[in-house]
Image (cartoon, rainbow over all chains, first blue to last red; front, side, top):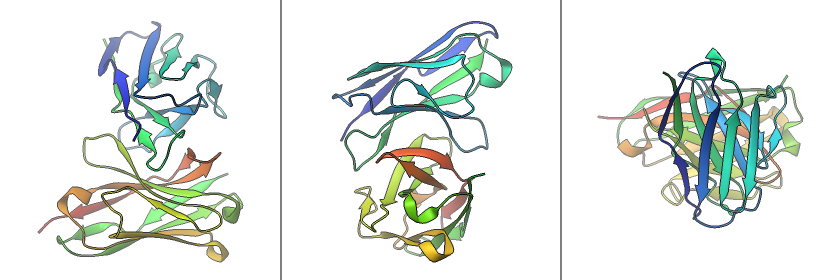
Length: 108
Length: 117
């Protein structure tokens, strides 16, 4: 089973700042990694697929990078609606599909 | 517009059964793999099960033998039969559309399953 470890667990930033979220896999997942955003009481929303491709309708301030075992989600300039929990997910080796434990992005 | 609507959740005693449904619209259901993902209260996301277009099924180890995923293409519907439920199965259950073998693009709003006496 592929284990994804996200860091930090919580990130406290202000609107307008740059956010950098990390996801590390315990073995290579090639580029088969996605990022999701989840707000309270809502379903997850796909932001980035295959490490660096923005999903339909996702603003350009969201970008993804990495391959192998190290991945990054960057939000270039935080908007108030970006404060949420973010999960990474791999589809390289499954079952099972696995998710990271999440990073909570909170307003400082 | 892609829509996924889950139903069938509720309160059930340990050892009991529930059948979840997911009604889809806005896309050709038969052409997509479909998944169930759950989220325990205050916790992260956990993949549960998947069914491929050809009907092959896949399960999380802890639910194998207790849960059964199925689909009815004529009715654009996905199901999850859950038997021998345990307290640790308590969660919001989401259905999600698959893409590119293991990707998850569209999600429903979820249905809450509570296993408690």
